[in-house]
Image (cartoon, rainbow, N blue to C red; front, side):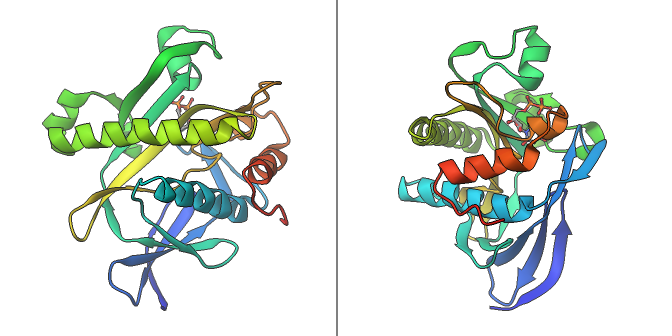
Length: 239
Ligand code: UDP
């Protein structure tokens, strides 16, 4: 398979066309952004770490029957994925109050939710990814109601699988963001990355933050936190 022209450059990844129809070539970058691109920086080795972390999570999910875009990791920073048309909805699942939920509801960060909740955000940088509900999704024609139900059920299933896996590694899955896309065959599958850029992970005993909040909130040891996640989930830390 050959890497062809770049299709898209996002904040943390580049996506290339390939010589094989239906497959894309992804390159993970060290660039980090927060607050809708207002804060910018680089985390040395992040591309390599997130490429491997995401490959581990997406392979686990595939084993557990959650179809997704991951095909194969091909180098330190690169992986092959199925080509999808991304549905412009950021699906956030939360187990513990943190970040924007804590702020919106005036809840203390760390408060356990009685059950996992799912939120939708409109993936639109110009608007700053506003929170939306089922009616807004219908109004904007982002996806059908039945597809949204499938997406919500998949998101909750993914939460259970990841929570259980991470619990064995002494990690708490506080919240995370997912994206879904439509394959050339029209099937809706999980796409994008699952990494400390897109999830909140806390150490189960110390509650130490081991994710991008270390970058967002200038807590220091950002690279070390990503390395720790990689180490706990069984990856190589040679970065
Ligand atoms: N998240 C993400 N991309 C975004 C916004 C949020 O990956 O553009 C993730 C974030 O890492 C966290 C979860 O979604 O795990 C919930 O984020 P929240 O709404 O609390 O926003 P934040 O406080 O990160 O701005």
